[in-house]
Length: 269
Figure 1 (cartoon, rainbow, N blue to C red):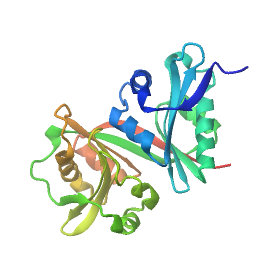
Figure 2 (cartoon, one colour; figure 1 turned 180 degrees about the vertical axis):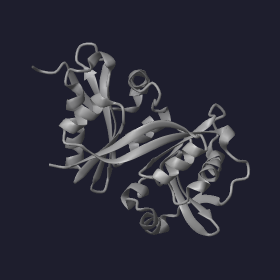
Figure 3 (cartoon, one colour; figure 1 turned 30 degrees about the horizontal axis):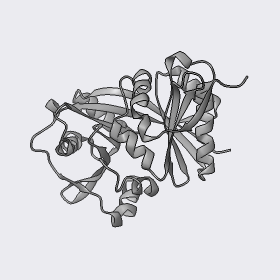
Figure 4 (tube, rainbow, N blue to C red; figure 1 turned 120 degrees about the vertical axis):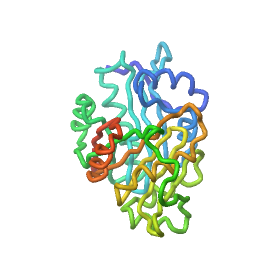
């Protein structure tokens, strides 16, 4: 049976309609307009919308990024009224098709741990759980006015060294440079680099958020607050993989867990 929708690339004029469907699919994690626009201009990213043939309504979408030979299915969603019709599977297949054509040897994505329907879909497509991830929310009232250490922007010439220190993909880090509202930051204490994050002040949040000494978590996040100009924000989010000691420390400090995530991965065919 021929589908009742077609796929096309998103464009800047789609923002208003896209925002409407995004609110329905991700009511707690809506994409901001600045992130939407920057994703359209990225050399290694692609945003695709599914459009109903008759009504021209948006019924689903996906967003991907290419980081060297790694592909990231950054976001995928289906309008609530169009679920369980095979659209989600089709969008995932098409996203992987684009990533494979871009030279990716493997693909990864994040999913909320209790989203069984999405996890089942990804497993059917060959994804396996790779890591456990967490997103924590730091309310401003938990931050300190005089944080220890200092924070600074990473320079282009030190990317390789930073990536070796924190086990990061240098191609991924390079693509954060020069993007609007993106800060690539290193946290130093007594001359030692103990933290790293890519910080988005319009989210606001840091991902990946890496810290070698969990006891400096509140200090690190307190420094990040200086990059935020929106007075409506009252908290900062951090997202990170496989840092159990950091999780234990934040729970002890009564920092709220927003999401427990699974990072899932599969090899290209």
